[in-house]
Image (cartoon, rainbow, N blue to C red; front, side, top):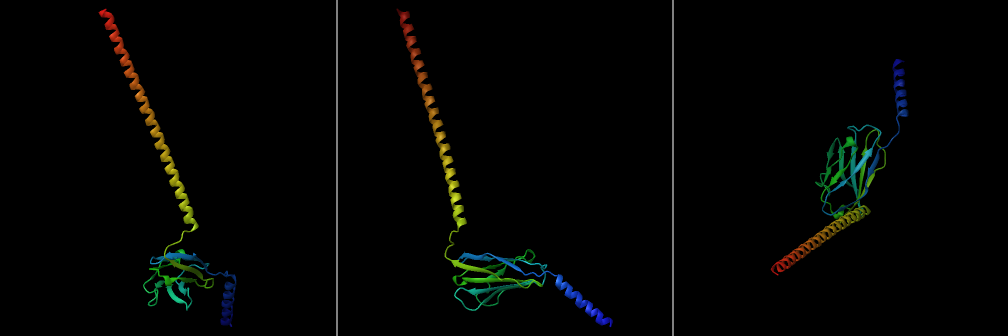
Length: 214
């Protein structure tokens, strides 16, 4: 009798805990779209939020869907330790760059190729939070990175600043040149006055001398 009562109490407690435990899912955050130059490296950023504390049960799974179709391919797996692919297109080309304590599940993809174009999925499970939308990043490998609006804005601001600096330099140089010209003119005027005074003094001396001889 006592055993049945204890069992019922435990079951009842479990049901109550399940009822009061908030239902939550892992939220995934990615850049959604990423553009990188062929032959370079790219960080596939994936962060998450979870109601449950991060522990050893956390798992991260990265997969890849080619742009031209075909079956989904394994990219990377993390559970306590990172597990890189032992074969396939991503062998020796992917590394762990996340930090579960900071809710970061990012990876690095090395030596990008044009056939790496496609969608990369990031799935994080942190029991009891195992549900949630899988994060996606659409990677485009290109010859050169196109300028975004931010790049154009930065270029415009930089050009405007450079133009202002050039204008200030020109104004300062012009003012310096004008001061120099005024100084040269003033110096010439002083020289002319000095020579004129010297000539007049000489004439006076001659006049005085002639008067004395008369």
